[in-house]
Length: 232
Image (cartoon, rainbow, N blue to C red):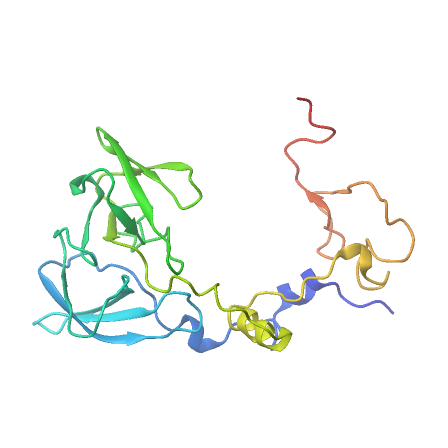
């Protein structure tokens, strides 16, 4: 009797493929009706994020969480609509060349882009209601002028410089984020574990899965936009 393949087991859920509850407890982002100054009252090392999370509070007792800017410290004050490092402002109000992170996709959605340790994007140009931003991938993306972002670079830069050294440590790092590791090639598996498995057919052609295939068979090219050799 064959086993369920990895896609099926992950889809069903369970203790093996489950994110730790503590990893997603905090939801960093911006509150919609915030203005004035907020003070950083705590820095939190979240296992589900590569950036430390800062807890901010204003004089009225209103609290929100956001990703920490580089060199942020407890007691530092940030503000909405101000233009210093760590402040939160509208994209339309910032100058070209400003480094930003945690950018909103749509106004007041709390931030969706550039949220990894040490990451930053750069404002390139403004055209009417559109702001062009160069992302960390060096591609340019357009945003609405009313979208907000945090000024500066995200904290946590250099996290990849220190070697992991042990496979066990890497396993727990990936497990805390519900990532599958180690990733084994399908053709190296046994036939009962994957449709591509077995000792034969290692030089196989790419398989196009049927659109209505069951999860155990839906492997290879899934709903490809094109097939065949790419002509230059």
